[in-house]
Length: 306
Image 1 (cartoon, rainbow, N blue to C red):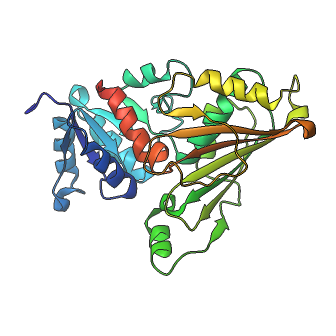
Image 2: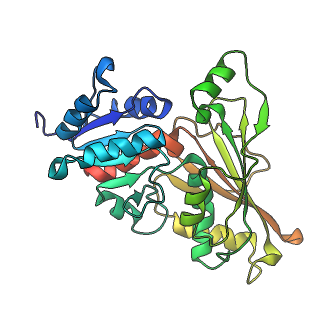
Image 3: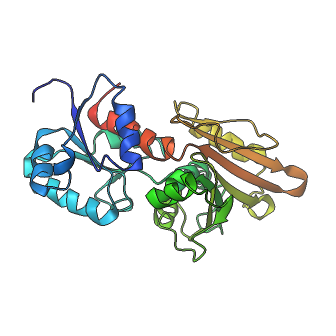
């Protein structure tokens, strides 16, 4: 290696997530960021040669291309770099560690020791952050009929959606994936600890980035009739040592952009104890803790950076 610093190559750096990761890594003096000339970015031989030179490759590619890139890296055998995949291709693959360090105790250490890590989806980060501790604590049964509602900024919808909103101006608000087959459902169910598939209703607003994920609950249908205070206490205990995830006091209203350009995830419990109802809410930047911020957090663990 030409430097003692760990080296990183972003395969697919021209996309929204790739650009976000690059911008964050450029601020880190502890990483040597490698890049291919634009003319060679789709050249398999050039990419393979680059993979052989670096310590870690971040895959910011469509699902099929991420699988092809993984095969390319695997062909290097013992010279293969560590891989961090930002696509949906490997999120429930048992050969890959799931890149949500705060999900359960010890997850950060597992990520640090892994050679292949799948970066979580933005919506699942909020949903799993809310649900998993409550399932682990027995306050929500694994087979409970969970409903998840969420709104994201349009930057999470890819180049065509970004162009529509940045150009002529997209719709103020729209529901989508109403066929109930959103690609994030598998990881949400698996890592949320749920045996019953949740209903997920995502939406997009006419703002660039930011996200709210909410889970409504009828408290009197939960075993033990947990209160909002009980739910809040479990979440607070799970994340009490976390740098990036915090449990905050409930507010009368929430807007989605407050955590933009950070790697923070805020969780809150809004309960009406008299009505035995509650809404769990997660707030994050879909491009931060929901994408590039989480990726830099994961690669820092994988490379042993501070």
